Image (tube, rainbow, N blue to C red; front, top):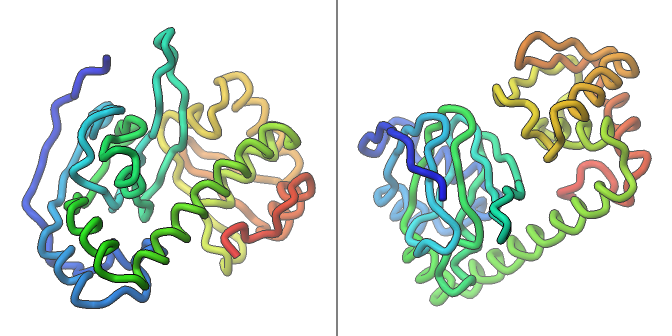
Length: 245
């Protein structure tokens, strides 16, 4: 069992109203009054690296939007091994679909780079689903999309090589309409990306640098051509970029 690390918390910051919620597709186009209620109830937390936000099978009372930093979602096997479900950057939401899993979190969440997250009461989400048919359909679509993402991950591990899987991870961090050059800042522990072992990650990154002329400086990666990255990464995938479409 992981121990919860020391962390700092603060009261809710009202200087950027609704900005975090509107980054999440689930809440785009929602009733403004519902979003305002969520905003008032939200609490800002600043967590240090290695802080455990929640553990698998904990009671699901909050869902979270990441304002900055990186969050790792993982499960532990019966043998005590850790299986990484996802690594989430700023703008992503987590804990929201566990509303359907017997009100328990289906995985654990840990900070892998100092993070600021906004916590919102899951009870408000549950009430909106029960009373707003339009939002309940949005939530259903959101859950289905999440399952499709898991299916795509299985496909990627089957048919993509390591450099392509790394390229796919990079594409997830870039807005679809952006062109190069683009600067990306990855978590300090870059070997967490795509669930790769350290040696596999190093070889995959070296291959991308050689094939696509990527420039790597510490945790920063510069991508010169989005078209080249898309062609290289998506050639062995059944999905059409951008995957969300």
